Length: 342
Image 1 (cartoon, one colour):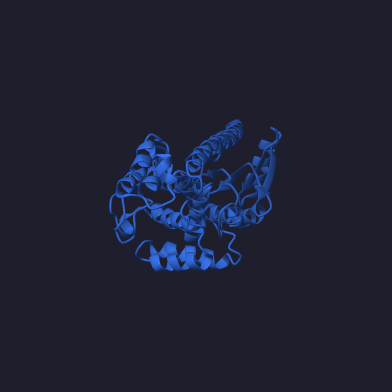
Image 2: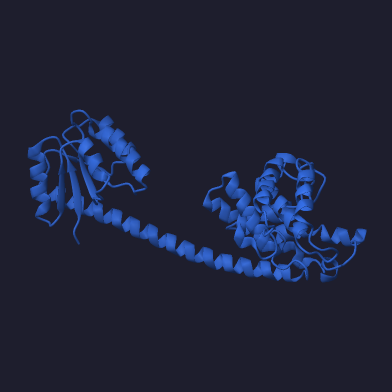
């Protein structure tokens, strides 16, 4: 397997020496005589390793590695491993170099065999680390896809209890994720709130179908049973130790911003942020979907209700995001099975 090493040194004698030593092991060498030359090369090249001299005119090795890392970040590249070449014995220079991301130091004058072995072993170590990282990522993605499929199946089971709300959990999950995206959550946080949205109603598994599907108004006793589902859901999901955030969506999605709802009567910022997002998404879907006791509300009515609940029922920030989503949905497609249009 061929390796490519960029060697950066202002002394041509050192460049030729290192090139001759490494070439004997079929290592391709790119010879560069300054930090600026390295940065120019890195815009198009991808060496396996950089051997970088510490003491160079105009731009020394420490400044060069600092600018290198900034450039790699700008270009979206992985950090290239760097080994410093130095004739210095000062501990502070080595410490600074390691802090800036150097992998190792090789002292001048160097022993050819030692130089070759350290370069090859360092490249092999980095490749092994990258391979392991890629494998862990692949396995994580496989597990997440499996977990998501299980969660979706469970959400469909929950929704099946209600004759009139097929797909409710999926829509709430989608709306919640879109609110989170617009609010500035990163993709990982968006995925978490999506899962929370899928399982926010898991506690309804323990609610009798007769209460869930009752066409008329619930009695006080029936409403008390229905109000127990957030706590039931939190208890069920507390067993999922790897995703403690699931409990948050299940327990708190019925809390109102003004503190007048259940189960804990929390208000304002005391309500977990994700639950405040899910709350407005849940209410939106309830209003825009057919229920056992009414048809879907018109978009104008739904919008008016969100405005009315802004700052009382809903966090005003997330209510405003939902209102923006409604205003963009000119054909009222954001309901029922049209969540793909988000």
